[in-house]
Image (tube, rainbow, N blue to C red; front, side, top):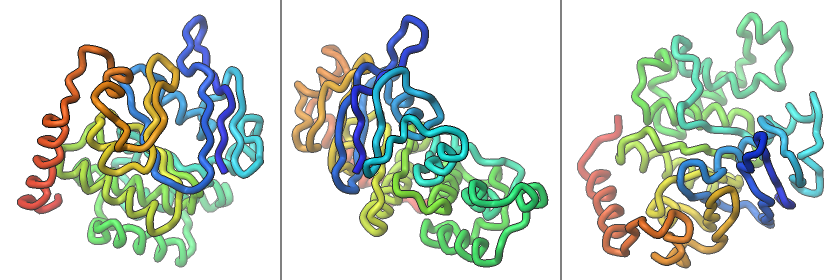
Amino acid sequence: MLELKSLTKRFGDKIAVDAVTFNVDQPMMIGIIGRSGAGKSTLLRMLNRLSDASEGEILFEGRKISSLKAAARREWQSHCAMIFQQFNLVPRMDVVSNVLHGTLNRRSTFATMFNLYPKEDIHKAIEILDRLGIAEQAPKRAEALSGGQQQRVAIARALMQDPSIILADEPIASLDPMNAQIVMDALRRIHEEDGRMVIANLHTLDTARRYCDRVIGMRDGRIVFDGRPDQLTTGVARDIYGAGADFSEAATSTAIETLDRTAAVLVPA
């Protein structure tokens, strides 16, 4: 389904992603973990073709994605949606219009200039917002929403593309624990209910264990772990994050329990 072959990205003398190779043979939720600077974001940007690989190949269902140009590359990006840490919404635009921006790749220049959308697209956008629990926010400006709500708008925009793959680059890094759980729950439901592949860059071991079917650990641009969440032992975590990191089972369990308690007593914003 998805295959990476010796994928490498250089910035001058620096190697950001170093000969990364892995296969995904069915839709699943994959977490990519590692310290800042490990190459996680660069890897996702190459998958989405926001950045070109220096070497190697990306194939999806046998199609060589890494060599696509111009219109073919834009068409791929409509099938491989990207969600960013900072949401990338238009702050002064209403929520439903932000969601409808997910259709830009298939709209004419005229329709884009005059902000013209078919009724069926508007209805679909509101249905997606309802699915994510924020339909009542549709007429509001994006800047009026909380961070967690804005990230759900970004997820809705990605779903408007009807993508085969959703790439999420640190989707909860700027959120509080309650909203982080809401966003991760939404991504997990999208994978399970829609059968979409979700690949998310994550900072924490806890989140990867809780939500992902498969975890890939990166360090200094290389894959140092690729396996099931239950294989993420303290030793493996130290291989990924460094010997000085504290990843005791007790600390992990406490973090998860705290998140659960928070979810039980707070009402989502």
